Structure formats: structure tokens, C-alpha cells
Image 1 (cartoon, helix red, strand yellow):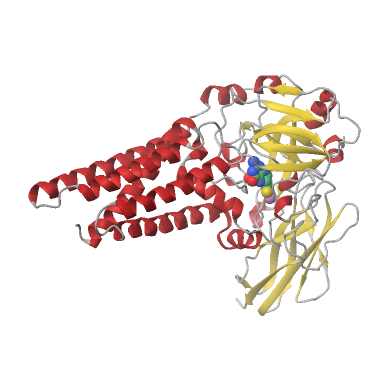
Image 2: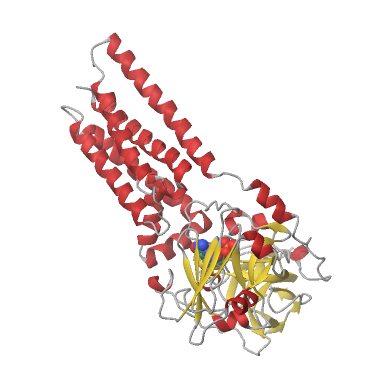
Length: 497
Ligand SMILES: Nc1nc2c(c(=O)[nH]1)N[C@H]1C(S)=C(S)[C@@H](COP(=O)(O)O)O[C@H]1N2
Ligand SMILES: [Mo]
């Protein structure tokens, strides 16, 4: 038989061909049924909460890339093993490859968004993987002719895998071109902001976050691609009248544009998961009135295209004072795919995991008994945003000139708004910061303050107070279950000029 190196190579090539064939087929029938992605998605859903939190802390928004790369390494090693154990013939490796494939089948069927063809890509992957492995190991090892045949088979499989892999990815990115343009023409251009809404010149973010820079947090390994023509929103459960609306139906209803700062419950003190945009869509309260909420209903249980679920208390959605939208526009553009195209929820004052469902497909009026995706994983049911502030300048451990120095940052307390921000150096007296022009209580507010920094190591801290008079607590609590608290502090070194 073949040398160990050739067998290992055959294992890797066979598994690669299998995954590529499955990926191509999934691109044609069901994107997330790709064996590689299905296993990855199951891994995300099955990962214990502490490990997930660690992954987000270490890798931030690259956590999914790290997972995919890690999976590729593990699968590669298993493929090498499949080759190495097939010393006398392809049978042991073929059995192993079929066993991995079965894992893919299980993962694709178990997906909450699995469709009728869920298992097909993984089944085809098994056939291709076993077939390729047997073909590679069976090519006559005799000299010239055998080597030619092997190289031809290997080359063919490698080229085929590349084409299938890229093809599958291209197919699952089918653009929603026409509907997107129709939507774009219905969206208002962003209105000018009042002067002095941010202190971007001294290091705060801009008041509005560009769509491309808006933070992104979700469980989707690949961005769901929803066909806007086939999209329907169902409003059901404890309602007088069920609704089923197309995108056109939604566009015919009253349109509202609100500037809202979204905040993630996973944001550590000082973290980046908060951004602001103009969201355009239909007030959720209008749809609830249309459907007629029955007495006893407590939450709107929302479901996304990819099976994610969240629960929003009805009071937050019917409160006349706070924006609560089924949004299809973001900063004058149709929602980008990463942020929930075609329609997502946006509610001021609640963390995103209980209020901002992207790729929305279902709103069900229920009681709080019905558990959501994150509740099943130890997060809270009720999650109003906690007043927070962050120092953006200086950066941690930055070296700054001693003497007068402008520190600047961001604060938020949706839906009430920020009333005051104070800063202090090395446990000294609190000094009130200057606030940017208020846009609304539903958005963040920037602050700046001139500090006098004596030479040496300095610790700068800030704290905010909201419009109800509640001052940010110093007590540090972690993000689980309902959002971190504590004062952001930065250590910097002031140096004589
Ligand atoms: N379908 C779906 N919607 C989702 C999530 C998700 O994982 N899946 N994550 C939620 C969380 S935790 C947050 S903070 C916001 C983030 O929205 P963004 O990515 O547009 O900033 O989306 C929410 N909506
Ligand atoms: Mo979040």
C-alpha cells in the first residue's frame, strides 16, 4: 500500500472534497445545511456559557473566525488519522470519514432553522468523501501509470473542491438586488444633527455610527441571506387577529425614523459594543394594536430566520415615549445583511439580546413562561440598559503630556438619557465634564473635561448620572446575567514636555 504521507494526504483531500461538495449543495438548497457550518453552528449553541463569554472576551468580533479556523484544524487532523489508519486498504479511513459525515447529518437536522433538505448536503458529503478516499487509495501503486492516475485523481479533486467551495459561498450570497433598491428609494436621507453632538475631534466616536462600523453581535456563523420577496412576518399567539405581512405590506404602514443607541449586554465596562444609527421602520405598537393584544399576554417572543429567539416585555413596546420599531432602514440605507436585512427590531432602553432581533420572521404574544435562546443559557429575562460611561481618550496605558489635558468619552442611559458625567484623577475630587448637545434620551452623549495631570502614572475614572438621578454604581458586576456595572478607569502616564 501507499506510504503514510500519501495516505494522510489522501485523507485530507477526500475530506476537503466532501466538505466542498456539501457546501456547494447547501448553497443551492439551504445555506446553513453546509456540513462545516452546521457543525460550527451546533458548536456555538452547545458551548457552555462561561466558555462562550471567554471566547467573546478574547477574540471579540473575530470569535466566529477563530471557531472556523479551529474547526478546520481539528477536521484536518482527523482526516490525517483517517489516512494513517488505512494501512491495508481504504476501509478503516472510509468508516471514519462516514462517521464524521454522520456528525454533520446530525448537526444539520438539529438546527432550529433546518428545512426539508437539511440532511442532504451532509449525506452527499459522505458519498463524495468515501468515494474520493477509496479512489485515491485504490489507484494502482505500480510505477508510472499508477502515479499518473493518482496525480490526476488528486488534481481533479483539489480543483473540484476549490470550485465547489467558492461556488457554494457565491450561491448563498444571492443578492437581494431589486427589492433592496425598491426599499432604498423609500428611505429618508439622514437628517442633519444639532451642532456639537459629539467630540470626535478630541477622540470620541462620531455621533452616528457608519453602518460599516456599527458593532455586530449575534450567534450566526454566516450571515443569514433572506429573500425579501419571500419574506413574511407572522404576528400570532395571544392576539385577537393573526397577521401575516410581506415587506410591501410593511412599507405601506406608517413610517417612523428614530435615532437610537443600541447596546449589548455582553459589553464589558469600557467595551466597544454600543453604536448609534437612524433606524427607519414601522412602530411595533401600531402592529400590536392592529393584531389586538389579548389580556394576560406579557411578552413579544420574537424569532429570527436562523432560529434565534428573544423576549421583549409588552410595556416597552407600547410605551408612547420610546422608539420601538420593526426597522428596515439604517442611516438611510436598507438594513445591511449583518444587521438583519430585511427587517429587525430596535427598542430603546433594553439590551439587544431582549429587544433587537435581526432577520426577524415571527412575533408571538406569550407569557414569560416561554424561554428564549439566552434565557436557556443563564441570561436574564428582563434586561433594561444600565447607565454607563466610558473613557475614549486617553487610551489605556497611553503616554500623555503632563499639565492640562483633555479627556473625552461616551455615556449612555437609554431611554432616560444622560444628565451628568464626572471625572476624577487618582481618587481626587470629582470634576463635572462638559456634555455634548443632547439629541435624545435614546442616544448616547459624549463628554469632555480638562484635567490637570501631574507627571507620573495617573488613573482616570468616570461615572455618569441619568435623567432620573441614578448615578452609575462603582460596584463591579460581570455581564452575565443582565449587564456589567462599575466605573471605567484608565491608567496612563503623564510625562513632562
Ligand atoms: N437573529 C439574531 N438577532 C440578534 C442577535 C442574534 O444573535 N441573532 N443578537 C442580539 C444581540 S445580543 C445584540 S446586542 C444585537 C446586536 O445588533 P447589531 O449586531 O446590529 O449591532 O442584536 C440582537 N439580535
Ligand atoms: Mo447583545
